[in-house]
Image 1 (cartoon, helix red, strand yellow):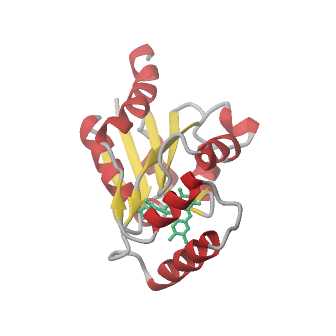
Image 2: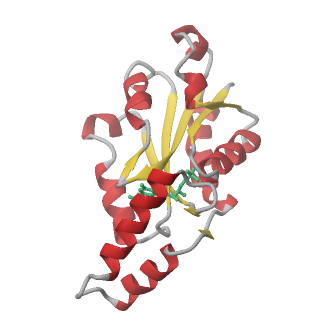
Image 3: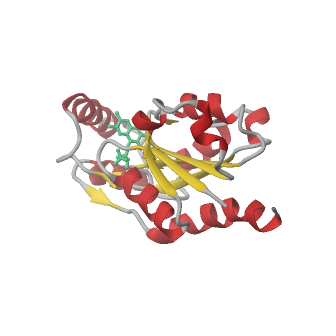
Length: 181
Ligand SMILES: Cc1cc2nc3c(=O)[nH]c(=O)nc-3n(C[C@H](O)[C@H](O)[C@H](O)COP(=O)(O)O)c2cc1C
């Protein structure tokens, strides 16, 4: 039984989740840049393939590449996870979980969310600028709730919400079919 974890990460949170998953499942780990160079044959032997990407403006980065491939891998156990700065359970995470996959994709890919954080030290300049603009626009919001205000303050500096326990539902899902098979 073989598992492959593919990921893309700018500041390290998604990479950390991908590494935790690969280690926990004794699977192989591949940056999406390397995965994109592989021929279709490379993936044939894997029973389970999981893709993780960071969240940018509500979408998983490079999810399109994975979902394109996933449509041809329906005989495998498939999962995708997004890693964002929002804490698990926040309303925007619910929206993401509802919208990230089409009804058709939901039939063969399972979606997860893992809270990451913000790391301004590792963020590239365009990302830093985008976030600064986003935070200052939010701060000006007149009808912001206390909860939102706290969240905006939090986003002004780096923080880390990542938690190894959050990989467990993904592991459980990926292993399901492996037990059946
Ligand atoms: C331009 C930009 C847009 C972002 N959009 C979202 C978002 O829509 N939802 C969210 O939860 N986090 C968002 N984030 C935060 C990142 O997803 C978060 O920092 C994540 O942990 C980064 O993962 P990485 O370390 O693997 O790159 C955004 C970050 C940047 C730079």
